[in-house]
Image (cartoon, rainbow, N blue to C red; front, side, top):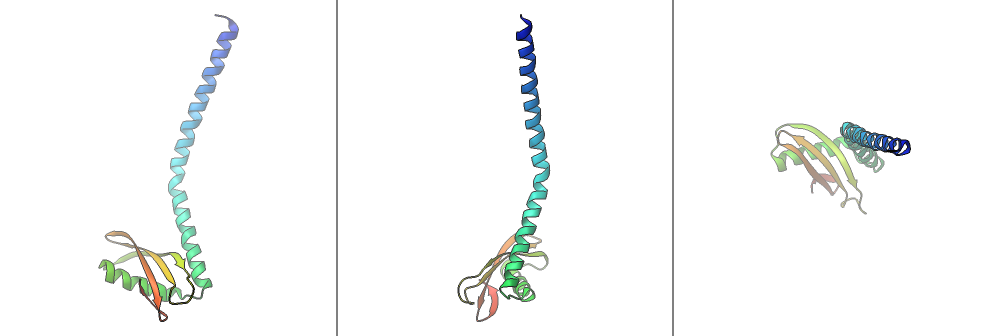
Length: 124
């Protein structure tokens, strides 16, 4: 075997080894940061929905009260662990507006859509 062939084989093994090591490290890094990314996206989604609702003049306390009532009525929930406004649907006219909440109860996470009729929010 010539010296050149041996050097090329060593370089090839090093390149393949470093490539495989980088691939494995990047996969671990991605998996480790995935939970934080999802939490960050949910927080941004929630804040955007709240900002949109505030911009439209919707009263946050009224929306939350209606969402709690809808969760109790539809889901039979006795205790609500968390309530998050995730989407604001502002259709033409006030009676077509909708707000989507994620409600976490003892039975899991659920989605509740509220609609407005005659200025009053209720389950859609």
